[in-house]
Length: 394
Image (cartoon, rainbow, N blue to C red; front, side, top):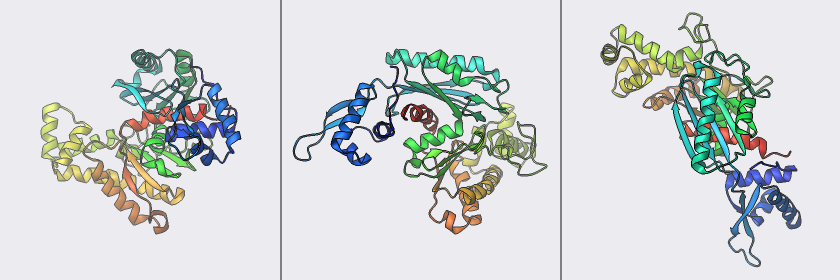
């Protein structure tokens, strides 16, 4: 369907309530937005005419004439696309952002934008065929690097050669025939947490994305904060030391060089070659290289050297978070993308540093937790990204 956006702020608020909370009665909606019965009826009728809302049967009786239930129209369908450094994930959701179909496959983002985005479009087409969809309402896209949000283009992404200023938003809109929005993956994942994760009940929080690339999504006042030039939260290349390990950006001692997957594996290789970890040395001799999974397995098996290098990486991340927590005063810090088996080791060290070094007023009631959405945060957040745009007053 071709979506016609809400006409005014009341309509936008009504359709967002139905997206976020599911079907609600006319009476509940009127109470939530403070509209009289007649004004609510007029606004709802316009939303129905515009194809945004539909009736979902009668509501439970509250005495007198029964109200009807309303929901986001069944024809609303969003696509969420998350491009990672080595993987692409595509979903299609309904208007409430419930995932209806999903597909993921390995891909190397360094091959360039045309083949990666071409494959993403093919995967969206595959899901549309499975669901029998002729038209999408909108598509949201997350990329693993800095994004100029108003332009919808990557901006000098260190780990994405050939992507600088490529018109990603226009490419998706043209290929799929629907509105598209593009953002940094950490911002998209933060939106996913806001919609369906532990961030749902917080208006101000930080989402820290670990993995191949490090990022931080800031949600302030219930919405993403991107800064003056869309670079807020770009913490990956904050310099921690002058003589630290080399980073993909060309500098040394960056946060990502210590805490990203590449940094963890590099430290693990050093431990194996120096004989500090017999488990990793044996794995290196067997496979010729090491992976993050190998690091996590050794730590889980009690390898003291590997646990120490993981704690060192977490301590450095914790030191960065001390500054962020003191400056932004979030209600919660959510850690996503931690390697399987290492999450709780990293979390314990991060908590220790942040709670010890931050002011009690900032952290007294502030939890630091692991995300429970896993990869789902990104694809739900991508759908939320474009739905926020389309469910706003036109």
